[in-house]
Image 1 (cartoon, rainbow over the protein chains, first blue to last red):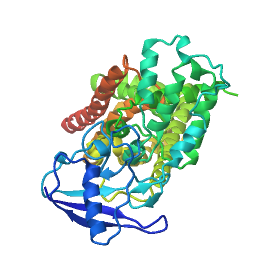
Image 2: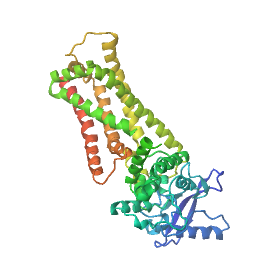
Image 3: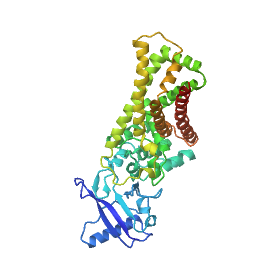
Length: 249
Length: 209
């Protein structure tokens, strides 16, 4: 199929950036979206032009590296997939496809479609962990009984790959779904309960410092999340936050 | 935001219940209105709390809206909001502004004259005046039209706002969230439609008298 791509081009952080139009031809429906961009980049390199910069790594939907806002949706059309799992058969011959980077004050554009998502790492550093002495005689986690329902919910929350689609798709650029998944995956387990109060307060504080917006419960994040992280996690984080604010030191 | 929303949901139900009485009995409506208009607990405790809740709700709404706009300084060239969220949830500020505009009219049209009547002009209390005043107000076709349009926007606001308030307060679980959402949808339809019915009822009945 032949397509017209409208792609955001931006030399660096300082550059204002603009949308540029590129035609691509002979695209197979079996190609992934990123393979299609590889074809475009080969074409650009052969023409002596600067290829389009975009993030990617595993290309099997588990690393959280690929991003891209495609035709107005994070990771493009289709549900519970990342951009690398999006196939060109989702588009029709002659289509025009808009490709933009994640847009948020907390995700500055580094180059073209690449954004700096380290704000999410800093939220994790603020409390997304369990302090365990790893001197060599750490107790096996499996020796602590965990109710199956809690273990399942914690696991579901832990499937968040931190791609930032929730932020990108939210009309408020809120990181509540990401932060709540990372709070929940530990809050539900006995090992995480010890630091639960400090964790939620510190992570939410860091989230606010990074300049993310507020959650207005539109639910767009849950729909666009490639891992189907549930809004239940946001409610859980709100409960944890309320409880920590009232009872915390 | 959610806490003030929950309070306003309860207030709205109470306001609706009292207005609805006017459809069934003028005397009962006068009696309840007289109680609400003269009871010191309602006038000097509940009324200021309500005022605070309303002001808090819309000021917080504006603050959050400004913060949210700042969180995405560069807009998308192509953003398909309808793909993943309802119009109501994405436009709470617009429906909220309509309601705020109506509240301003409601204060100027009803509350200020009421305060003037009772506490400035110090008129003697007439427990039978309320029903007649209500019918007189709804005799104006423009007032009824503005009233009806506003309640459509209130319905849209509530359609998202009801369940959103519970979610923000942390109340989300597979056992009760579907029930909250269903009650929310009914609340968002029945209460505004009921207010519109009451307005039209008195507009038509008043015209017949």
